[in-house]
Length: 432
Ligand SMILES: *Cc1c(COP(=O)(O)O)cnc(C)c1O
Image 1 (cartoon, rainbow, N blue to C red):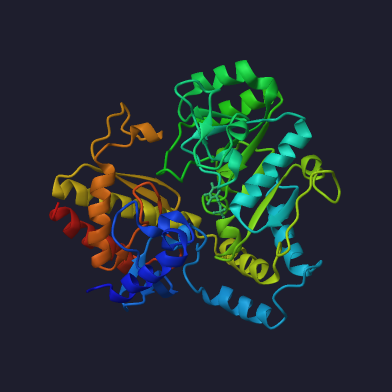
Image 2 (image 1 turned 180 degrees about the vertical axis):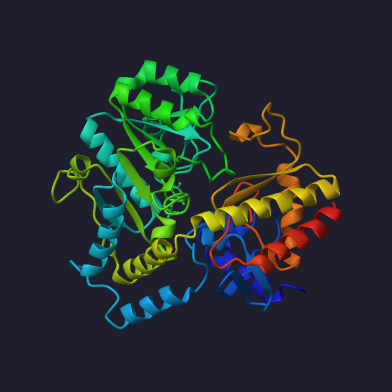
């Protein structure tokens, strides 16, 4: 058996951990089969417990802009460990990270560190409700904002105001405070603001939706959304947990020129350690305790090891400023991938943004050829992706174990890694 040790660890894990994993997608349910258990990683490669090596295009779901075990980050973290790993009081390390972020991102006047993207979203929503004195939040179907109750909702049958829980355990009452509108539908967005504008505390959006495939929006999407919110007196929250410091230093806000009132971060800012952050306008952040009445706290918030890792990661990104290099590499890779589809006679399109890319298998039925909301993903996509995923896995290439998750490039990915992907993909498609 090729993955004997992984299989046996998974059997043990399933007995005592729900589904055998600590985050659902890791169980491989989306692609079938048994998850490989990873024992170590370096650069752009993973090694599993059965000693197979993989080129990693999942990269821990985004935090590892510099790849696994970047030497500078490693050195900083090692030094930090020798200073102690949790103080539970004020310390200088988070200050340095907070200063770096606020001094370089104009709309981030104040910031608070938490331990995950979910926590950041939860707190930002609370601040928005407090500051506006309103209770409703508007979100988009196809955007992910972590697992806070009020965001685990889906649109009801047709009507935007009839949202319902999208997870067991979320009460209908909580769901009713969230309005859900489709992506790529400005008419419905306008209508919801007309009907409910005065009740909406904030509209929260992934400014480039990257958690249900990479759903590229039309250029006017963010500016229209921002105009509508402003007119209604609602706040705009950019959830830049995945896009922050990845699309550009200042995330999509910098790239689009649309300025949010509040912004949430995670992933890249911890460099692979558990860090989240929320921030934005000073007058809004002053609502947060202890300067204001919005309670939010954390025993391990601004943990010195995590802060040091985040700081070392961001400093290196800032110094090297490799965004355009990484983007052009992604573009070339995307073209090579699409060529493989053509060769095999299988419809394959790559949607990409900066160092994110998403392979779409199957015939896209839209007029302009783009997939902009979940309903436009071809039916055959998931089935083909699962076959491709397993063939690549057997050939030493690790993609996200879900057809609806994007792939990530890092600074550590080199020509040989891209080639391994396209060559393996060619063989995989040839067999379908
Ligand atoms: C990953 C992600 C989250 C959740 O962050 P966690 O650290 O997993 O809690 C929220 N929003 C977006 C846009 C994300 O990509």
